[in-house]
Image 1 (spheres, rainbow, N blue to C red):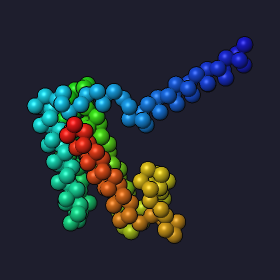
Image 2 (image 1 turned 90 degrees about the vertical axis):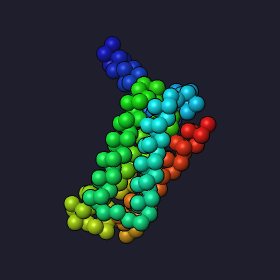
Image 3 (image 1 turned 60 degrees about the vertical axis):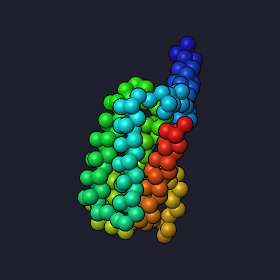
Image 4 (image 1 turned 30 degrees about the vertical axis):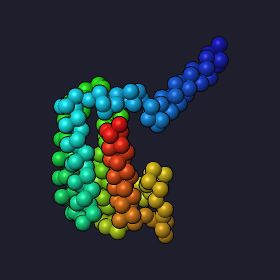
Length: 172
């Protein structure tokens, strides 16, 4: 009897896990029903401030920033993200979810950049990031490595694209 139950339990657990992963990956978490038109003035203001902060960082990245300045800018964005999340509570609109992902991209870029500095590889990304950078950000290795500038540019572009996507939801 136990030999029969173990495969059944494994199938059930895998089915639940797969469904959960699909649900998260699809982005269909009922946020679409919480459109921008349903936001209060406070919620809209908090989200607009977050958008402006992310766009300001993107502008700074166009001219170049140091790692230490970048980390400071991320701190400012985190304050705005927390304020927007607090204002929206459990009814966060899809635009805020997307902006949160844009912030996560920046946190990932900070991690990659910081590890590159720590490991003394200012030009190359540490190998532990290669697989994720290739699959999540579409970067191709050169000489079995990934250039740090290519990695940061790709991650920052994806974040900027997410900000644009979030803005399109805010305009609806």
